[in-house]
Amino acid sequence: MAKLVIAGNRSPIDYSKGKESNVAIGGVTQALVGCLTDDDVYVCISQGDDDPNRVDAVGEIPVSAGDYRFRMKKVFLDAQDYRRYYEGTANSFLWPLFHLNSAAYYEISPTFPRPRFDGNDFFTYSKVNGLVADAVLEAAGEDGVVWVQDYHLLLTPARVKEAKSKLRVGQFIHIPMFHPAIVDRYLSESGEAQECLHYLFDALLANDLLGFHIQDYVENFGAAFSKFFPSVHPEPTNEGLIIQLNEKRCHVEHFPIGVDVAGISQQAQEPLQVTLADGRRLEDIIKDDKERGRKLFVGVERSDYTKGLLERLFIIDKLLEAGMPVRYIGAMAISREQIDAYRELIAQVESTRNQLNQKWQPRCGYEPIIIDTQGLKPPQNYALLREADCVLMPLYEDGMNLVFQESILAKQFLPHDRRGFIAVGNCGAEKMAFRYGDQHGVVRIDPFDVSRSVDKICRTFQSQYNISDALIQHALQRDVNQWRDNFLKRLREIEIFPSKP
Image (cartoon, rainbow, N blue to C red):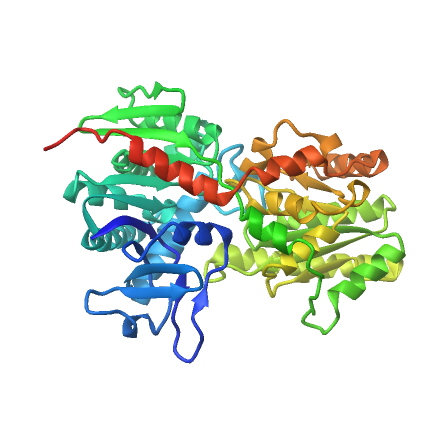
């Protein structure tokens, strides 16, 4: 039986007929599978149509890819169950709700949807969490370690603990934690949603260790728990909180995630070589911009309404109105386009881009906004970030945002006066860098106050502030492998409660 089982929605590797295996290259996934051995198991939802043909006699897929050696146990869902679990509860209810940390964005943003609770979707979400728990239990011994990932599987730890109480079970939430005062009005209008969250919070307490990115989210969780269970008073500790209810006691602590520091540092000097869909070479466009004195603004994000994608374009519009010669190049990887809110967001971004280009191209003599939806993979994403005079990130709310750290590391080998700066909204990475301000190349902007954001950006160019050596050292110390090791070390040292024979 496995000594360590990791469970998550996303599969490290999916096998599809007629195609090479798709090995996930994200730093977080690399860190997770990097701690697994031949005897350990990664439980996940199947996304490859050839996955069923790969399983062995015990229902697992042995993986030997590069330096990785582990076993995968896939959970197979039909299309309707996957839609209700993933597109429904996980990403139409939990995702937008948990991002309501600083404001009720669905009330002030044209692209942020109102969280949508559906009882049938939640029934399926619960069923899928049970299937994942069953797979974990099949793989785990009686006293091993189980590490569950993220908001897709909030009910899985409770199902696992109910069956095998001696297992050490931890969960890390990769998204923000909502502030209870912000969601009060929404919950008061939706009794079903409030009952659902009460149930979810009770289930989360089955974890021996529950992790968030930053201390703010830990405190939000404690405040929300007290709201749902008024008789329970979270106990502060040096590490975070301890919350105890009946037969459950959970340590709630923060573990700031990082990036693949060594990998990014190795790739940060690779040349930019990107061909756009229309055949133009991105490196030629950027070279011409720099020769003509244009300021290059860059965004590298997936298409999500938490990222302030429209606000980026509004900022570029205002900068052009102010007379600054600028170009914005956005690498926008399309995601979750099966969900209405995401399709509508993509359509609005494309429409706004076209309108602004039609407005400014005759006056400027060039196309000021380029958005590429092919998606950039390493090292090209780092190469594009490296070239930016300003990495533009007017985020509404983001759990951490690894692009912030990647942007800093991508520029570490440039002279100080060529590093540019980051204009950033609300995210965990910005909060972790609270000691660093404009003079260090971190310019904090409000995505909903475009005029003031533009003023701050213009002043930063005038002051010639750039990313500092101190900020680079800060990013170099935020390694994803250290995050993984710190969480697992803490999980293994916590005393399981209650102690049972």
